[in-house]
Image 1 (cartoon, rainbow, N blue to C red):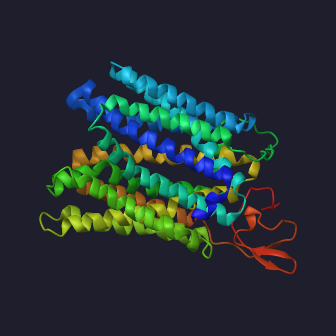
Image 2 (cartoon, rainbow, N blue to C red):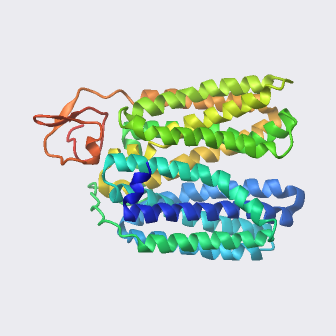
Image 3 (cartoon, one colour):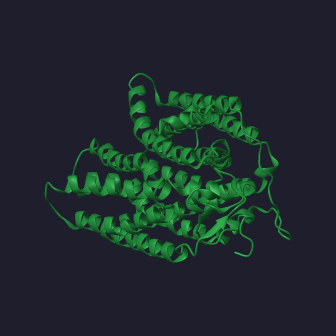
Length: 441
């Protein structure tokens, strides 16, 4: 998998992603401590509101960026977003009111909503080979999982010698380093966007085109299934550890680490699997398995005693991580294959916005329902959402139709990832694609 780092441009972009993630992780810890300083016992409410603001920024800003990004230099857009994020991080230690936190969080996450889809759309151009791109997606998944484990540990170590305000300095340095690395990377020329007659470039165009492709509509349902499971882990891990199991705070990182370990294990295995198995055969069974894992969580939730509950919870969390990773890791391949190259930024922006819209629904549901009606009701509700969403994805993503042959596409073209060589060209099958290669489909 590490062989993909031989590509100089990708190596710099990947390192930029990693240092920005570490900076963001440090900011997350520092923001929690800042919220406690400002609001005391109401810090949880402040953080919950900040998290909701983050998701709103993602949902609203990403489609707008997708609509205009093709008119802007990609490198300049990403560097500007990093510099904006660094400037906001500089300001955070000096806030004295809760509303100021909300404003800065919205601006910070709006810049992230501009950076991330553009970054995601650049990688397929930097790595046109399907095998390299698949490995890059797994590397990205690993980066997110490792950051979730490394950043809190780093923050804890730093807080033994500095105050939390200095953690924001690490955030600033991370974004500045990311900007420098992006600026130094040589990016390929952008493929011209193909305009659709009679349709504007409004912010909703990317989402409309995203939803015009059946398997991308299925991806939206898959995003909802993953969000249901992920929200349960993110929001209620501390409740399970402290209230259900009666353990100390030190067991909370253990539970979250189990989720990350499951995700990383699958991310490491997937490149070889996806070389042999279509995305559909990986993503749909993984989504359906989430409902089974919710059943296991229901058993742990209903149990009132027993030393087996902690190991069982760790297994459930690891299974959630594995299934979510199996759905999320191939997502970039799916988007890449489903739209013309000139529309990738808009498609990735639509995926970014719509997927975070799912999290905007499941985050408060996991928290509020768990607190008001009990964890058993939260498990039932979110498990039902995961099951219905997975079944909807199966219905929306039909099995490939009869095979057909492409005689005019070059070796290594992304659309030929699942094709095999025949005398007349390349033979494969798939669902409906609006990619300019299949007239009348």
